Image (cartoon, rainbow, N blue to C red; front, side, top):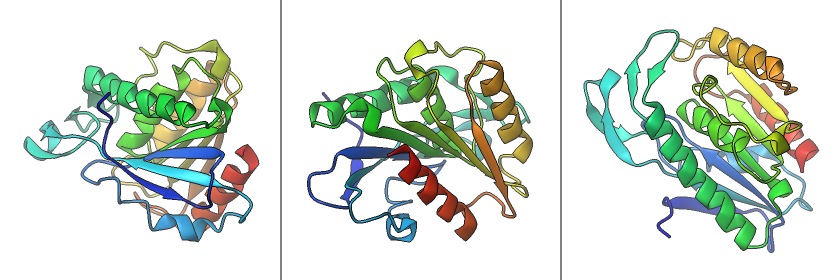
Length: 218
């Protein structure tokens, strides 16, 4: 099996939980590694953080420049016209990493999918269609790109979903987070949404909320 390249960090020996965290457009698996100490997770929480890197592909909205991307973005319209087939292929690659974690002894109920921007769209698609119960979805500064095509798995109906977004985000407008929250609620999920005074990034208040949410889920 050919897995995506990943950066792995274990907070303690013998982890019993895993967090797969997908980066945004143009970044790689190193992007969120420095955030781990800032989360200040309790020492008794043994977590394996896994930061996969997307393959490099031409991105239409960036003049076809080749960069790490989970899928091509065809238009920067409010509805975000994206290459859904590529997005689903990326979700399948992440699902393979979930399977590997289960093979390594982590219960599926102790696995969280997190993603920033493009990575969050992949997290939605992968987690909600994964056939074994997962611990949660963390959707950061992102949108629900496959809301019309996703093949949901009923076992995820009660999955905790944390949506965090900047009110001043010029890249992924906050209205897309609100739209995801509304659509997920209509589908019967119970997402939580929080907004912050920031642009397309993370802030201290959000990091504290992320830490609290992770501890609640795990």
